[in-house]
Image (tube, rainbow, N blue to C red):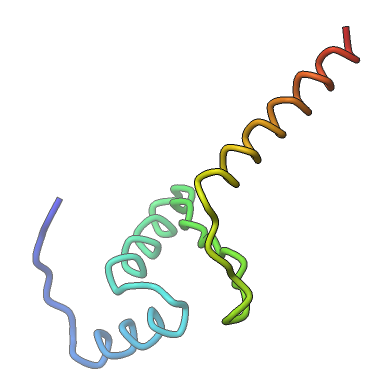
Length: 86
C-alpha cells in the first residue's frame, strides 16, 4: 500500500543515511523499523547471486557440434551411472 507521511527533516536525513549504509532503500529501512516495533519477523532480504568470472581472453567460441557432443557424453555418463545402480 502506498501512503504519505511527514517526518522531521533531520530524522529523514538520518534514516536515509542509515539505510544507505546498510545497503537498503529508505522504503526497506522504514518497513524493517515498523516490523520491529510491531513485533513481526523481518522480511527475508533477497540474496545476491554471483557468477564466476573468467579472465579476458580465456574464452573460445563453442561450436554447435561441441555442444551436441557434450550433451551426448553427459547423457551417456548418466545412463552408465543409472545402469550401475540397478
